[in-house]
Length: 461
Ligand code: SF4
Image (cartoon, rainbow, N blue to C red; front, top):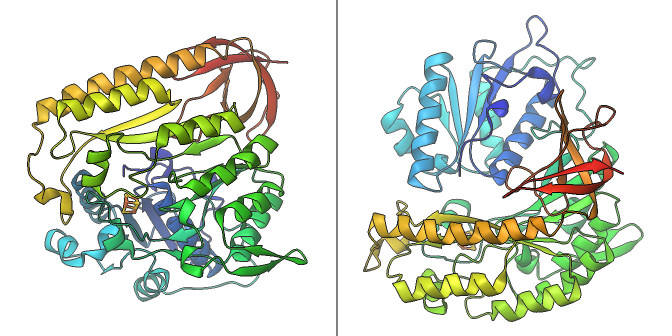
């Protein structure tokens, strides 16, 4: 929903981060601005992988690029504005711009503001993006130097990688236009996902971040069919997929899981250590009437009971979730239910959005929109509670020995993450003594000696 970190912008990214040598003389070069969520980032990676395989160089700046691809996000109106701004900047700095991604589903919206873009393609239209690139910047392959790296081009640091298991969504949450933009659920065959996961691990990836719009629904569209895998068969079902992925030897982190009853089957895999004891589960609210008005999947689930069952089966589980406050019609009493629910649920990690109308969303037409100042007040109260819970949970970790993965090392400290922290959205653990020999991707044991609101500090043991 928001722009990727500055180091993934072509105007700022070091070339080495993109796994590329500078363009050789005469080699066509493309720039890429990747906006939006991790799912969009995976699309950008796929496009770059193909382009590099075809002999294009990837330019880290606007001036070195023969054209720039802008992968847009159109989830919220603020994300649309950000996408239009990025297109404008690329036009100004480079002049030759191809637009793709979610906002590409509304080409007139883009061309109305930026008539000079070379082409507009929608989400996952890889072939059309490539056609547009070929038309704008013809390829000039050199079979001796343009070998595709084994794991493709990764925009994320090499020791972790996002892995997309399905596209689209069969739900119709009223605040969300993703099903209109991305279509119904289409799951990748289980063996294709596992092969990609295996290749990534072989290439040195230490952590796989499983993403989709609805991870627990994986395989429903395929009726959980069987696929050949390692001399046996694997079902296209999230439990089977997670189990097989867990055997590859990397950390496996599951994002966007909904609280369906079969999620309970994932918990033993966490307790066994095959999958990280971490569930990113977007509850969005706790009051049943609000959830019904949102048309949320599993709206009737008894989530507190489910959470208690997960914690019973895997006491070290970390639960992350996102919420919307100020949804149309949300009363003070409904909001209070959410606060009370938080007291019970004691979630480890929480993100919260104030409700915002999105062009085309059905929730826009609901009655009783909540005034902005009430939304802000509820957001403050909610975040205050969430922060206090997070702080207490982190404080309880002081003195514990835990495994962490190293993300970055500079002259001051090694920035790491525990199993409870997903990259870019959760906190960090810092080691500021004796860290010099560490390198990104190392997994080491530390003793936690200090805790803040969202981060920890520790020393190597
Ligand atoms: S589950 Fe709901 S919020 Fe998530 S993508 Fe589907 S419709 Fe959107």
